View 1 (cartoon, one colour):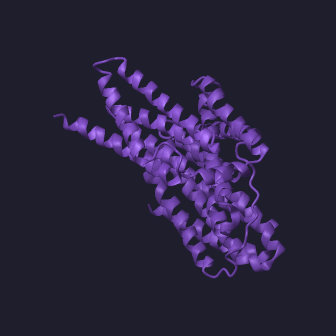
View 2 (view 1 turned 120 degrees about the vertical axis):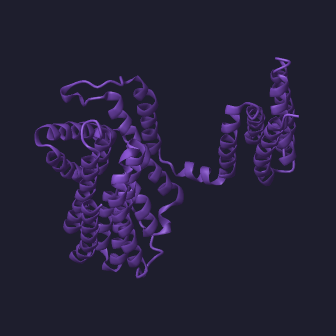
Length: 412
C-alpha cells in the first residue's frame, strides 16, 4: 500500500473540511454544500486525478459531473429562496481542483496555501464588503494606475544597465518604485481596513510604515490646536519614527540580506529605544480613545511614484559619483542629504551598490546615517510647525535615539 498516496488523500480531505466548515457556519438551510459535501468534493478531486493516469478522460468527466450537480443545486436554490449568490458554488469547484492538486508533489505544496487563502476570503466577507464601500473613486483609479505600472509597464522595461557611470537600469528603477509603493499601500490598506478610531497609538504604528513624516506633520498641527493632546501626539510621532527604522531593516532584508548583520544592530537599537520611550509616554496619556484624523495620500498615486523613480535614479548617480571622487566620505555625505528627502531611496540604493560598488560596511553606515538624517528633518518639522513644548519633548527623544544609533555604529 502506498502510504504517501494515503497521506495525500487525507490532506485533500482536510482541505475540503477546512473550506466546508467555513461554508457550513455561514450557510443557509437551502444551500447544497456543508462540511461533509466539501470533503467529498475534494476527495473526488484527488481520486479523479489519480484515475486519470489510467483513464485519460476520467478527470474531465468527473469535473463536468461536479459542474452539473452544482448547476442543478444552484437552480433549485435560486427558485426556492431567490438567492442568486455564487460564492458557495464557486468554492466547491475550487475545492475539487485543490483536491486534485494534492496528488502531485508540487501541487501538494501549493494546495494548502490556496485553501487557506480561499477560506480567508470566504470568512472575511463582511470586512471585505465594508472595506469596498469605504474605497473612494479616486483611490480605485489610483490603484488601477499602480497595477498598470506594476504588471503592464514593468515587464516591458529592459533589464540592462547603461548611461553615465552605468547606473541607469530601467527595470531595476521601476521595480523599486513598485516595491516602495507596495510597502506604503500595505500600511494604507490597514489604516482603511481597521479605521482610525483605534487611537493615536495605532495611527503611529501603521502611519510609520506609510509615512512617518506625514504622521509628524499631522501631530505638529494637532498639538497646536490643543495642548491637551501633547503626550498623545508625542507618542504617535515617536512610535512612527521608530517604525521607520524597522521599515528600513525590512527593505535591506529584501534587497540585500548580506547587509543585515551590519544594519540590524543600529536599526534595532534606534527602533526599540524609540518604541520603549513611546510606550513609557503612552502610559501617561490621558485621552487614549481620541479619534486621530490623519489624512494620508493614496501611495498609488502616479505622480509620487514617478517622483520617487527620479529621486532613486539621482541617489544612485550621486552615490556612485561621490564614491569615485570622494571615497566613502562622499557616500556618507550623499546619504545624509538624500535621507532628508527619502530614506527609502538611499536605503535601496546602498543595498544595491553593495558589495560590488561600495563595501558592505560603507553601505550599512550610509543607511544608518540616512535614517538619522531623516529623524533630524522630522525634528525640524516639529520645531517649525508644532509648539515649543512639543518640539522639546520630541527633540529630546530623537536626540537619545540618534546618540544610541551612533554608539551602535562605532561600537559594533
